[in-house]
Length: 125
Image (cartoon, rainbow, N blue to C red; front, side):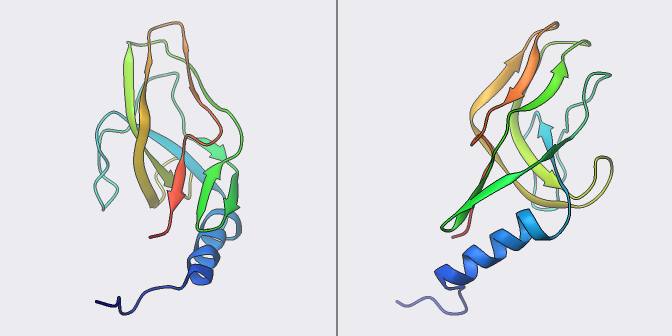
């Protein structure tokens, strides 16, 4: 059965390009729980944590972060990060896209949470 009301491949690429590279700054937020469609979930907290400004590369119908995102040295308690969301502000703001990391990120006190290039991937479907 044919899909109705779907974006073409070109349309998907244009939406992702606009979302990630044209519509203003995008900040990656880290979560310890899955993120709901309304953007709620357990965002990381602590004196060490703040959302990181990210740049993205667009290829075909997907985009991914281009640089290492260093969230700093964990100082409060060990943490395991399983999910991410992209916001339009460093604090508060609006959630735009969310997802799960392919591999969880675990850090003990005194180590840094690093998100490698390509860890945050947004794909149109």
